[in-house]
Structures are given as C-alpha cells and as structure tokens.
Image 1 (cartoon, rainbow, N blue to C red):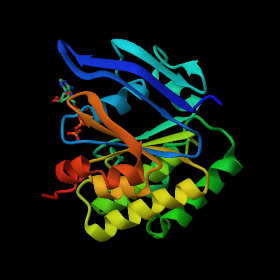
Image 2 (image 1 turned 180 degrees about the vertical axis):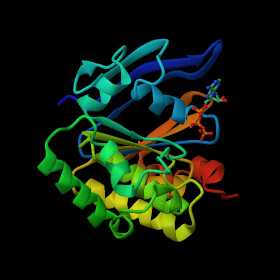
Image 3 (image 1 turned 180 degrees about the horizontal axis):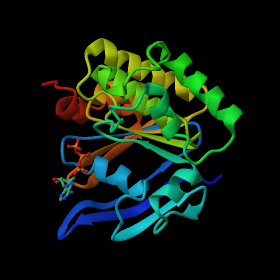
Image 4 (image 1 turned 60 degrees about the horizontal axis):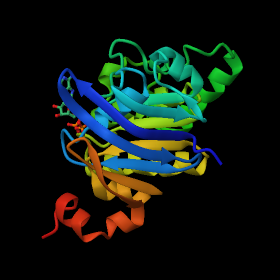
Amino acid sequence: MTALLQVEDLRVAYGKIEAVKGISFTVEAGQVVTLIGTNGAGKTTTLRTLSGLLKPIGGQILFEGKPLTNIPAHKIVSLGLAHSPEGRHIFPRLTITENLLLGAYLRNDKAGIEKDIQRAYDLFPILGERRKQAAGTLSGGEQQMLAMGRALMSQPKLLMLDEPSMGLSPIMMQKIMQTIVELKAQGTTILLVEQNAQAALSLADHGHVMEVGKIVLSGTGQNLLHDESVRKAYLGED
Ligand code: ATP
C-alpha cells in the first residue's frame, strides 16, 4: 500500500545554508508520526516545505503517491494537507467563529462547514463558549486550540502540527495532547513536530529524531521513548 505521505531525500536551504539535508520518512494513513529534536534541527523547515511555503532544492515529496513539489501552497491545502503553524497565527481581531471559517475558505458545502464548526466546539468547548469574542482575547493554550480547530476545518487527510505545546501550562499541554489522541481515534492522520519529546513520543506510532538537518534515529514512539540516547539527549536524564 502507498503511504499517505512519502518524503524522500528532501533537501531545503535558506540561501547557502542547508537547513534540511536529505531526510526520508513516511506517514501511513491513520498514524501519528512525530519529528522531535532541538531548536534549529530543521523540523519547522520540513513542515513549511511540505505545505509548499518553501521550495526544496532536492528530493521528492509524494502525497497519495503524487508529487507535491512545485505545487502552490493553496493547492496543497485543497489536496488535503493542513498546517497548524508554530506561533499559531490566528487573527486576533476576528471572532473565534470567523477564524474557524477561514480554515474552510476552499469549501462551499455550507451544511458540512457548520457541522465541522460544531465538531471544533465539541473538541474544544471553550471555543464554543466564546465563539463571538475576538480571538485575541483567548489565552495561549486556547489560541492553540483555535489554530488546530481552524486547520481541521479544511477536512485534511494529513494534519501537520508545529509545536502545539509551545508556551503552554502543563494542564493545557495535556489537553492538547489528549486532543491529538482523540483526533487519531477519529481517524485523522497527524504529523507532529514537538520539542517536548516525552509527550510526543508517548502518543506517536513512529518518531524521527532530527539533528542539524538530518534524521539521526527513527523508531516506534515507544522504542524511542525507552532509547537510552534519546532519554539522555531529549528527556533530560543523566
Ligand atoms: P525550532 O523549534 O526552533 O523552530 P526547528 O527544528 O523547527 O527549530 P528550523 O526552524 O527548521 O528548526 O530551522 C532550521 C535551521 O534553518 C536553523 O539553523 C535556522 O536558523 C535556519 N533558518 C530557519 N528559518 C530561516 C530563515 N528564514 N532564513 C535563514 N535561516 C533560517
């Protein structure tokens, strides 16, 4: 069976600086796959390239077996890849509902959109309670929920989440991680970039450890969670 996403020898550079130096991995439908690694490892660059925001200098990206390279970002969304970016990028002056509707800008099935807005409120009740308020009044964790809800509004086949736990309190982080488990149970395929290796590996089917633009270690989430080198480097153990 063809994987939903196949990344083969992907290389991405900012000018002369190569930030991603030939990485390969796959995401099967229904899986949660995580990329972990320290600041600057190239994780965000990888997601931005998959979304069509950056052009690779080498390698291939296949989505449902078809090449994504050179397809513009808006077209990539319509093919079924949604990106919840690092730093969230919600629209603070628009209401929560308006922010969610922006995630559905490529759709015109009104009834389906309404249903998915309700689904976002079921997933994150706080968004429903405050639906008419400006999104800028939400806390950081709530804005993260809104960014995830908005990405889901395009009904993605693959949801890419960039550091959803960044800057959140432990309770909020737990809520976000629980939601990822819930989305997986509902059949959503997720590519998760995280610096919180413990949280990400605990729920991922597969994980890849990135260091300075390369994948240095891959395995199941559980194997990596118990790997001695991972525990020392990323889980703060001696
Ligand atoms: P972080 O968690 O900090 O986002 P990351 O693993 O996602 O880390 P990237 O943001 O992909 O890493 O960065 C990879 C490398 O590319 C870093 O060395 C970074 O400084 C560099 N880089 C990122 N964005 C740019 C840019 N716009 N111009 C030049 N270099 C960049």
